Image (tube, rainbow, N blue to C red; front, side, top):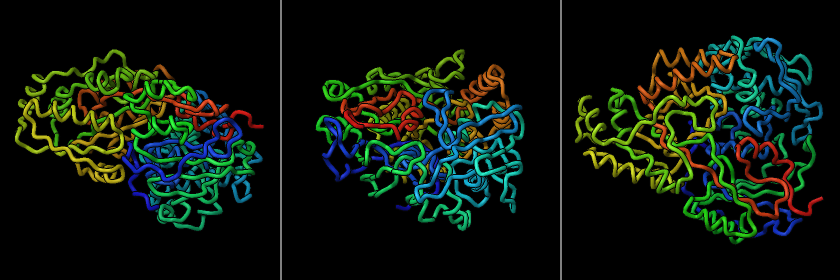
Length: 534
């Protein structure tokens, strides 16, 4: 597989169902766990895949320093602890028995190597913003040209790493953004490869030296990902010998659960059962089904070069009947969202009113801003997520109802991603799943790696930096309240809705399945087991 080099979104791609079938662990004692998922990984490179599909696939085979099973609750993984006495100098203590799948020990040098690789100016990575708080790197997480080592980052012994931030930060920010998001890679495999060539390496296509409970066995592009248990896993050999991820259209999930061809769906919004199939799945007696709110949401990313006046973007927003999408397409299983924080976020500014559906106001704002209603607007929609595709149809009707000349084009996920990154769109639909931590400089920052709009605001950049540097919750919340007001006024991104997630798990699985919080799902993969397993 050769993945695109611009890997910065979470969305679903419409793909053919996997060729593998049957063979479940139904009834207990099975050898293979079949999981249904909708979108394939945009990349298998652990440092260059911000899409949930890639993160989900890689996390079965590779570990982070810590995991976050519930919001702001952290548990050890490769690291036994991440501590600081001043919120500026942090010490990471590694698990002393951790080993790579080839038997080599996982050491502090691997952690130092990984962070330096991400910060290297020549590296292709989606994790720059995750390390941007560290001393010596710029706002994009990159070192100055010619430098290859982060100042203050060192391995003091085989199991201890020390690093410093530019200013005091909330320790939870470090634990989430670095601890749970940065997958550690092996220095002895990648250390001899030039940073600029890592993304083209064999390892980046399908890692063959891994740290997690499973090892990659085979990847059939757009069809399936196969894993075998890692018997030398430092936290104990997994009880399920093999896992097969079947990639399929969302419409196939209910039928595959019904037939037992899959035993669960994937988490993070990339394997969500369509709500029109929810009652069907809930009626399957061999499956436990839950509906959970989440922090993910859908957006329209405006190209601000096409719509330079905020009134144009405001007008487009007021033209959209978002509540209709929630009521009709989500069957009420969701919420209208304004800004990058859902009701699950402690940082949501509840004083802001939602942008209303008001066609008359929409036309007024567009007219005042001098918009020529005959101008063609290129509306790019990724395939694969049926509800999102149908929401685009509603929005297209809304736009045409006020006389706009909107032309919709649909592309698969990799193509949509490439177009979004190249700003080859006027409006593009994109699903996102950010962190519990409120820092979203990747999307709103002038140099953000996920800035698909071209938005650049000195005020926003200043507040984003202030928010990231503030260690106290109340003070941070005040900053992000101000940012949410600014973003709603300038509106480079219109958040549409947050759909709840459907977690369906076979009763033959005693331990495992999709947790309400995505981090809780990947945190326990190595412990999953069928009924009757020893």
